[in-house]
Length: 330
Image (tube, rainbow, N blue to C red):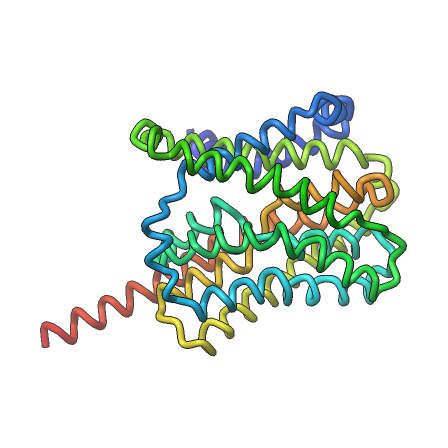
C-alpha cells in the first residue's frame, strides 16, 4: 500500500523512467509519434488549453509591476541563453549536441503550468507569475531566432537558421492556439473549472511524449555517449542552481516583496520543454540528434529542485506572517 501511494505521488518521475525504457526497447514508437504529427497536435491542444485557462483580469492588475516584468524578460530570454551557452561551449566544445542543446533550452520561454503551481505552493504572487508566463512566451517568438543567430554566429557553429520561417512556425504553434483559447474562454470558462487537475496531468503527459520522441530518435548516440550523459545532467543541475541564485539576487536588487520574490525566482528560472522541442525538431534534430537531452535534463532538474525551493519560500512566508500576527497582538 505504501509503495502504491508513493507511485501515485511520484507518477511523473516513474513515467520518465518508463518512457526512456520504451524508447530504447521500441524506438519505433517515437518514430510513429513524429511521422503522424501526433506530438504537433498534442502541443497545439496544450497551448489551446493554456489560452482557455488564462485569467486576463488578474494579469492586467500586475502590469504596474513594470520593473519585475522587464527584469523577467531580460533574465529569461537574454541573460539565460548567454549564461547557458558559453560555459557549455567551453566544457563540451562547439559545435556539439550538449552546447547546442544548452542554447536551445536557454532561449526557450518560461514554463506554462509548473512555474505557477510552484509559485502557489511557495505562497508567492501567482498573478505576477501568470503575467511573467504570458509575457515571456509571447516575447520568445521574437527573441528565439534573434538569440540563436546571435550566439551561434558568435560561437562559430555552422548552423544556418531561417529566422522568418522559425518566427512564423512559433507564432502558429504557440501564439495562435493561445489566442484561440482566449477567444473561447468567455464561452467555456465555467465548464473548465472542474478539469484543472486534468489539464495539469495532460501537460505532464505531453512532456513524457516529448522525452519518448527525443530519446527514441537518438538511442544509438546516447549509447555511444555513455557516461558523458551524466556530465550533461551535472552541468544542467549546476546551471539551474546558478540561475535560481541569479534571479533571487535580481528580485532583491529591484526590491520585490516576498511573494513577488518567490514568483520571480521560481518562474523566471524555469524553462518549457515544449518550445525547446519545437525548435530542436524543426531546425536541429538532423545535425544534432542529442541536442534535446540538455533540455530534458534541465526539465527534470527544475521539477525536483524547485519543489524544495518552493517549500523554503513557503516556510519563510509563514514565518513573516507569524511575526506580523505576533506584532499585532502585542
